[in-house]
Image (cartoon, rainbow, N blue to C red):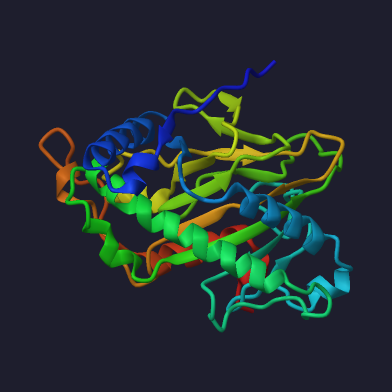
Length: 305
């Protein structure tokens, strides 16, 4: 039987309040977590939890819409929107989730349900997007300090951020052997922020190869590094594989926020993470190229005909 584990917990309250000593301490704790497991739980984040609860409710309301209302704004190669159950697949079997994706407010790529089908939805998730975008920017200096760089180093790549909000539905359906709600994977980008969930389901792979369920801190965000942050830190920070499955008798919803650099960002290992014992492991790449390949691998709807 798998034993659940808690993640390292970092309190951001002092950092967000502008206390320098708290910033240094939080950066040190985040750096330790990202070099050992690749995940950390943050509290004191100043995100009103009532807003998180509201978005969980909107996720349930959205996925309860009739299929025709969701298929009217399907995700495609150049648009955000809806991907139906089974539309994501990285392993041999389709993943048991459906999802809605939203990009930066005002982007022409965004598509939403008709307003009369779900009044208030677009306004609510747009407000939440802006809240999470603010939190992402507040975390940037901690990551820079943890990587040994000036605290403003990463800011230039996130002006604006390429952030994506995903509202995921894991229905209570039986899985085949080897089938998951979302397949084992590492995230493509820089940072993912996932609010604690009333329905368990997230599992993380230790460096040893053992998987464990996450025992989440109440009203916290589970934050993990993605492939781009791993490359940027010359593999110092881990981009850890994780997966999810709904083992409960009820529906499960998740609302991850992917906080990533602009698509034209050149990802090149920072000099603070390169030395004689740790030679440069990666050549520069443009984030757009990596992200496009990642999405096309996992989502058939994003592939151009």
